[in-house]
Image (tube, rainbow, N blue to C red; front, top):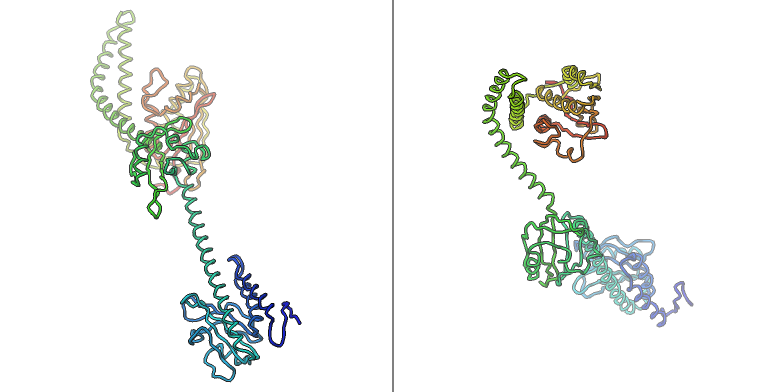
Length: 537
């Protein structure tokens, strides 16, 4: 008759046909992959092995990592369970398999288990991999009919389980290695794409095989457009590039190509720093060249700015010396012309000439004073200032001139004081200059001068006092707005071009900022100072 597994059972055991079927099932189980659960595979394997070896209990143990014992991996057992772990004494026998029979002395935990359960016999067999020990398998039964057959079949099962465990360990090793490599590749891909430098990889024929996103952004090409194209068609204008690549093809790293000028796809030039690194495999074969490109445009612009500032500092120093030296002669001429004016009348033919000399002397006198003021180091005397009351006092001094020029003042001041840390004299000059510019813009037509003081808390940790001075004059062009704070730039016929430069100089010295905006009607100058929130000292 057949049992639940479809095997023919006889008094002499399973048939040859069913034995072949079981061996085929074992072979099928050996063709697992690491995605399957090893415990489920072993459980199914033991079900087949129990029938094949004609035993009642089976248990597989695997060797612990510390090599000091074994831990239960899978089992088919009766009401009493196999021990969860056993010691090395279980394999303290010669050969690959040992037999314990009921009535013999008990020397191990497994033998004790067999005795307690009432088993007639218990086989224990090593599971090996070469000279290494993978674990052990233990099998026992309640009837001891033909133990030689059981022993032989258990040896077959031990070999199959050893192969199964070896394959599982190997596939898990490969899976772990693949996961490690996948993780490394993912990290390398992120570094490759997110690095700030442009990266271009070329083969031994100097054709592009890979670029990162930064290279696409800097050069203006997509990878598909330049894939397999000569790199010299992409990096246009780089002096010494060909020589550097030829050196890299010889396996020599090009440490410094220097700052070169490259051209983007649209033809725009930019400064770049280039390095060429040979890509060499473990077998020391050249696989390609790694080209690293740093966009140095910003650094180059900063270098030019620093150079420009140094030049301006030198010119400022010379201008200060020059102004100081010519100040006294101009004063002497100024006094002499004043004396000449007192000698002439309107009917005198030299009257107009003397007045012209006088006006030019006044202009030169103002210019030298402005240059000296601009070049003089700013050393503010800081104290707590209520900017509201300070500007109220400045406006009061200007009211007579406002009335004379038909200019209406519109102060938009808060009722509560707003304190800043500043220099009274410098604050006075800053806003006097801004009001004077606004008045000059409305001198012929009249208009409205507005001064708005507000508390700016866009950044709650660094609140500011914001003062906006606006007029209703003709405004300025975008071109003039860009250079309005540069020295000697002015739209006035009689201006020195230093008023707003000095104003910005002073605002910066007080840790503030100033900006200018122009609209269809008039300009707005906005000055911001840090609000003093601590106790006044």
